[in-house]
Image (tube, rainbow, N blue to C red):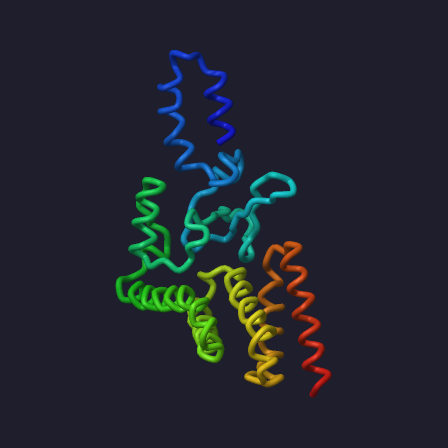
Amino acid sequence: WGLLSRLHANAPAADDATLLERIKPIASTNGFAFAGICPVLSQCNHDCDANAYFEFDEERNVEVFFSIRDIAAGEEITVSYLAGRSFLTTAQRKLSLLVSKSFVCRCALCSLPAQEAAIRDAKLTRISTLHDDFPTILETDTQRAYLMACEQYELMKGLGATLPDFLFCNLAGEIMTMMTKYMRPEGLLDDAQVSFWCETYLESCKSTHVTPKLRKEMMEARILLTQTQRSK
C-alpha cells in the first residue's frame, strides 16, 4: 500500500502506531486491492445493482471505472464492492459486506420481498454451481459443458438488468472458445448455432470496455461468423 508506506515514512516515530491504527480501517474499507485508495473512485457508494464497474489499467497505472448501463443525469454513480463475486445470494452478499466493509447493505436488491429474493437466490445458486463446475466438465464431456453454459446463459438472462453486460460477454466468450476448439471441429454444432453465439457475443461486447484481448476475440468472432455465413 503506497499511501500507507508514505504516511508511515513521514510520520513522527512516536506517533507511528497511533497513525497506522487510524489509517488501517480507512484503507481496508475504502481501498482497492491493487491500487490502494483512489481519490475519486473510493468515494463511490456500493450497490448490489451497481451502474458502473471498475478495473485496474496497468498501462496507465490507475484504477478506472465504466458505466454498466445508461446513467441518467443527476443519478448517483455506484459500484459493487463485491467485484468478481456477482453470483452471491442475498445472505452471502450481506455477510461479505458486513465482514469486509463493516456495513449492512440495504440496497434495492437486498431489500426485495422474501419470496422474490428466494426465487432470485435460487437462480444465483444454480448459476454459481454451473460456473464452478464448467471447467471440470469441459475436460471430459464437451456436449454436457455446452448445455451447462447454455443453461447458465438463460438463467442470467432471467435476472435481467441486475447483471452487468460484461458477465454475458465473458460467458459468451467461453462458449465461443469451446466452439472453436472442440465442438465445431467435431461437428457437434451446426452453422445456425455457431452464428447465434457469434452474434450474441458481439452484441454483449458493445457495452463492455474493450481491452486489447477483447478486441482480438471480437475479431475472431467476426471471422468465424463470416465463415458460417459463407458456408450457407
